[in-house]
Image (cartoon, rainbow over all chains, first blue to last red; front, side, top):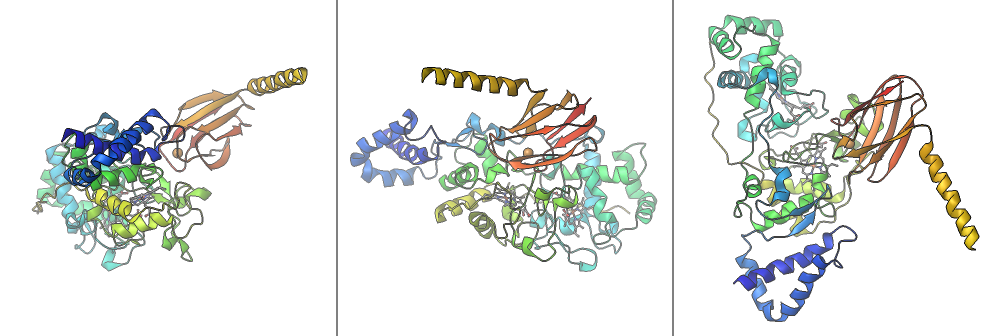
Length: 392
Length: 107
Ligand SMILES: [Cu+2]
């Protein structure tokens, strides 16, 4: 059995040998050895290979790939080279360190429709835990169902990002929180009325007092409480996280292959933008989406930074929980993960001002399927979200 | 033949030397999505060569009053140079990765 296993590993090493950077390919000792032993043993072992492949299909094979950072990554559960995919603890600003009281207050506010003009729309109307903290719509629906120009992004793991919104116009969760209440196209709230009402509602008055003793109920404490709650909306226990931590059974062989495609610059090249443990470079790229060809397209980041390359560029979102947040892209143009992968495989549709990191990929059907399976392994087990009772 | 070769070698050495001695050119590397220097003091007329040492694209731009430029985006190993002609504080960023920032004091 042990001999079969090494043979199986060798055959895989020989295959991925072609993805070494120039100068480290088949000619190197690492590249040649497995190939030679494969040839010698091939004749004897051939009938066994299929059996071995099935036997080890559930176990991740040990193999290496150079990733989009040019680093050698060993595709083995718990391997030290996977360290950059370990999510750290949730960062918090010094002036708003989370406490149970702050989180509890923030949760009430997040789910409270009375924070909107018509009293019928909360943050959770669009960022719903039932749809991966998004809304399952191509682009959002705002005040009295007004059609919004952009898709609702998930709020999962936004706590890790130093920049918010598709065009990066907000930096922190605290900075972002008042926006939807003020926006006439969204919750459209009269803020003077809102703060008067919060101050006149004994339940809220007490909850604010417990969360931020001695501080006024104003846009500062309201934003802080909502941000504290958002910092609990975290995905860090996906099969991928468990595999990175060392659980060999957390990913199947196809998902490991999908991860390999994701990080290999000669395959999916995905991690060139979806980098690190939260799968984002917090950067801006034009992906050549179909809507970029519209007569008056959304200029994206360009509105914030008037530089030519930023025309039609949008912020890289996380890929975590993607399986739960269809449809995809800021224009909602990809209905499924398969369609999304096809977009990348084509290298974009409307290619004016396309990001130089986008290119035609020529992935095989199996590689595309593996990519999708890998992305599905980025969802943490669903936990029930208990709705808060709202103060009066 | 040998003499020609020697002369050529000497000449190219001088050219390289001259380039190296050119009124203060500093090389700033873009590596691991960061500028290798966060702040830098230079003199009016000095230049900075921005070299991309990451295996993906970066950009270099500034919209500061003392210097406004956009070097576009370029790949690993490429380098583009800017000469600073005015005194003042220049904030330099990468438009692709807004976390990449540095400040140049031109004196
Ligand atoms: Cu950059």
